[in-house]
Image 1: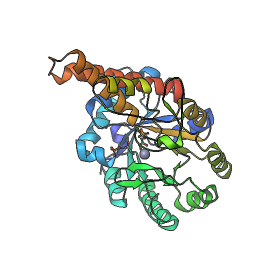
Image 2: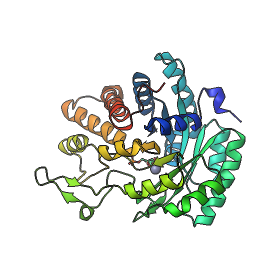
Image 3: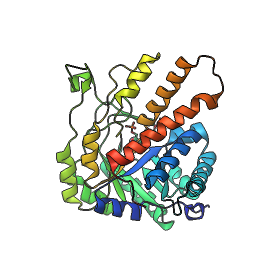
Image 4: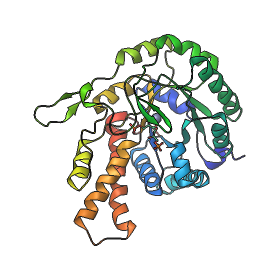
Length: 332
Ligand code: G3H
Ligand code: 13P
Ligand code: ZN
């Protein structure tokens, strides 16, 4: 058993309380590689922002759970080396799919876990979440749960359509499970194709898709039921069109990729939404930089040559999100 406290990590408790009060959201960036980890830490330190580094089941499979855990420990030391005296870094399991996965993460040094029972019937979701909470809280680890279904793929859970969270269920769910934060469904979804063209209108000038607005009425109703309770938004990439265009210009094929407009996320961050999950945007920034690099430097084959601009592009993206969208800069 390794306690996250020994690794210099923190849980989400105080961080979320401060964010809800202050009307901003903590960035939750997924990482799979060393370059993503470095870019996240550099951005967080430069902007003086707390940060959640999250690991999906897919990331654990790709990078190996032990390596990811040591990378998070390394992230804390790296932040100190970059001049941050007291880094506020959470190591979080994203979309935990079972009690066993959550327990294994808690035992290996995670400071926060998500148990995603959103595809289960309401009562079973409560039962599973409660079991995870009981174990996690014994170790001072915080737990995110989910109610409502996001469209798209969440690891192996795929849903064609989203089902908004039912505000009338949230009090019973939060009370019975004891979870520390709740991910809700208000129209966001995972990946770079968040909406089908038929759900959008098209901008006449640019020909780009304009997505439908998020269901802020559902968010408001949830907040009314659970005042001050930390709310989480998954699937919150904005799919920056500059990166999509660069990818397409240099041999990629991402037609009609569309995300959540940043103004809507900014509005959400000012409310009880205190954690915003972003993964796809980092993937797009990295891919765009690498495609451009190869097109402009066909003779390069040293990974450091193309991973350096890729890492820088991700860092700039994270800084932009922290400062212009979430508002978590200058909070440590
Ligand atoms: O929830 C989805 C995240 O973007 C993680 O994606 O399962 O492909 O690592 P992944
Ligand atoms: P995006 O695919 O919109 O980046 O969402 C990531 C996410 O929700 C991770 O849990
Ligand atoms: Zn997610």
